[in-house]
Image (cartoon, rainbow, N blue to C red):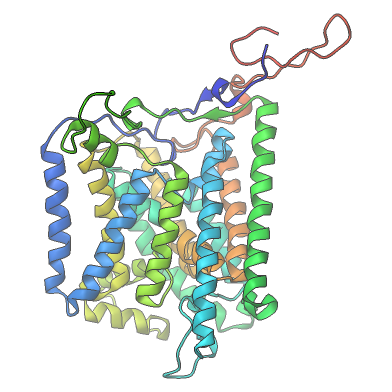
Length: 479
């Protein structure tokens, strides 16, 4: 009798509308028009750059967004899932992939920072007008009350709405109709969050401190400290996985057969590039989380190199909100909105962050269209829609109060060697865990308390007749 292994674990639950990293995609529809639609969308999105003031900047931003959206959907990657998925299933593959992503990005970013500093560049908050700035250091934020409160509120919202900022955009591209409730409130919620952050940071209550790890440890030391932090989180993830196995609540996602790699043609059969097997392996098979994480780290560095700034998502949402309310005569004259008003005046098509976010939506859609498996997901109730809306509002308010979301405050913060990224991570985790505890079994995106369900991963240690402990029993076996 063998001890329990992951192959003995029950499949992860798929009822309702689960986390985007767990939701099974529909099987390929074998409709040849969907890949054609994808090609048309990609061409149209890139050609729209002809309407921009700087077509090359538009194409760069749109192309980057399309690729990001494609990666997020092809690998089913999600930043909010790093907390929710392991809590729901006990299985931490996504959490560990996120750690790999942060580690790769921080290592390369440290090299870019060092090279820029060696050429005379300085961090953004000390740079004088016209002075060269180390790329990405604008993401090195202060650790203060707005960051912590915003992180907690954002963590609650992402659980209620079913995804963070990048995940919400990707979900919309994948046909998740629920995003039509969460995203508008996400966008509108960014306005009060943006204003409150500006108000608090200019008052004693919002005072904080900024820690750029290379200033304390040097660049090699900053990378070492970051790696040690990531290693510490990895140990916690592994210990939690083992705890869940011992507890008897541990489930592993089973990929659908249409998501798996098709073996090579039999020996003696000629290889053909233009056949269903090759198309399936190139454009249909699912990427694992590690592949998605590595590619996202590459795109993070690409954005940093090509724009001189770190990847962010939600700052564009404030621009969208102000532009929308301007249509109804609502004007924002507070100094906190000066730069936002300037971006609105120049046109959203000329705002790189907005263009990149739109690209994420269409990139995710194209990932499914190229695979012939795009469908709309309407599996929710009116009560769920209210939860999505409130969650979106919390995310918008929290993200802008904190100065970023899982991308701008967490990913960019940690990868740009800032203490603020780690602080936001702790606040985010606290908010996410709080929401999971409160809403379990109450909304369709959060399942019931696992302790009210039958165990699905059994290791029952019993004593044998000779007084020795017997081998733990796996699910489906007898002790």
